[in-house]
Length: 325
Image (cartoon, rainbow, N blue to C red; front, side, top):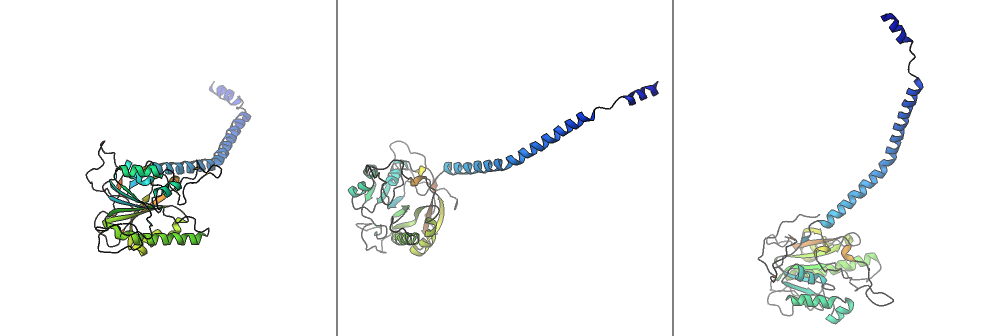
């Protein structure tokens, strides 16, 4: 009986091989097709991942907490402040109580002709007890020192016996304007501007004070070698540098050296013109080479608004800041 069963079982035909082959072949072709699709998708996924990483890095940089290189109680000198929107932001939004903003133009009328918004900014600055000085050349200004009259103007800058009074001297986006279309000459002109500025600014520094210069990143600005210019022109050293974030200064607008861009047809300020505040920039904090004390190189984070009606606050210790970002 068992033998017949075994014979009957052995007599049954095996499963059709075609089905297995078809199934097997289908499986293999699907695997091959899946592999081909995966291989072709890999470069696309890699490019997408890289683009996402770059976008994330840019977003982080934009939303990083800004570094502010001064305190509200500092005595601040702004050199070549263009349309004065930076100075207006300092007194209105950063509650700086002692700001001296200087411009090269000879009068408020000349400045308003170049920058229509300047008159409004002057009013904001003076309303908070700070001041605007006209016809001050960064390359020839006299020192701001104790016991000096007519400070900041004139060519006979003194290395005199007076002591500098400025805790911070800030020169944002220095530029000589379009003196030449030759890149090498333009670089040299701007280097000469900065060397003269450093030499004139150092006598105005209070003990422990600092000079802050902000430049756009990339060429031709990197060709200026601002660190070397400060070292040789003003006996200064770089204490640190950080990304300049225009958004940390509400109301600030980058002012071109040559004035606003105007429409050729109407003569009015052109809407949608190039905006320098949207361009990557870096601030360099310089201190005297022999200045080991004080808080000249210290910086702080963006402050909270003081209570209404109060513009000053007790001086707090500046927080530590990282070096070059």
